[in-house]
Image (tube, rainbow, N blue to C red):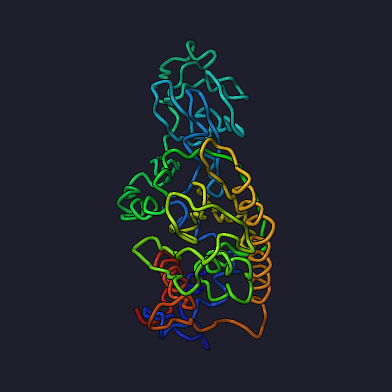
Length: 381
């Protein structure tokens, strides 16, 4: 691969460590297939990934599958009561073991019927008793690092990964400040969106509300924009706003919940976003999963009390799915097309001293993490 892609090129303006002085990442970071391949090892195979929710594997034998690029993983509730994640591949000839979600007593490979328990142990390999020196212990499933955070199951392919609670220190307290009953929530529904844009375009868009007034009229009516502030931490950022003047917004109506607020959103490096809407207890996760250099699959999972969307939360989810997401998708797809224009390569961050709702400092924070992970050399550090 062409490592020169990661260096400042002729005619480009520098990416500065100070967002107020910095130009954005060059367009090639959003369109180049080689950079996309570099990101797999440098970012996604070394970072925490949202897999699902504990309520989806509440009983022994329950499982679901997920992917991080080409790496197929399954999460399962073991007979010993422990939730684990494994690479979803048979130790015999590499066939995938499970599809989708469900409940089983034993994991049996569809190819040659090797069978595994939910602790990952090989318990039966047909005819292996007639193979000299065959030891079942040599063919256990390969486990993936897993932690549970506010009911969400997080996995990491890096066996030496820093613990999730350490990587995102302070996030647990922030979420509980807005959603004290987060541990009582259960999975309610998943909405899926395919977007013709690089995953980083979607993250950039999430991390600023500079575009909110022109592009999201109903969202601006939902929150008190004068109080909307984004705060960057080491590996995450928060963007929260106080309650609006009325609970009858253009987006959706709601009754005051446990805590009075307008909106609370969180970004977790590299591609996880957590959303909290006002009213009845709720939390949703929207993760930007790269499919191709210029295609991203977004999954938004909703969690509610009892795993049921009340009329109020159904209105919120419908607004998110039918209004806010289409608005953002249109913006991001237009940006992706524009990134390939001969007239564009970089822009300038709008970062103000007060870090107001119009400031793009969180986008700069994210792009700096991308460049640092890739080892890019684009200017002053």
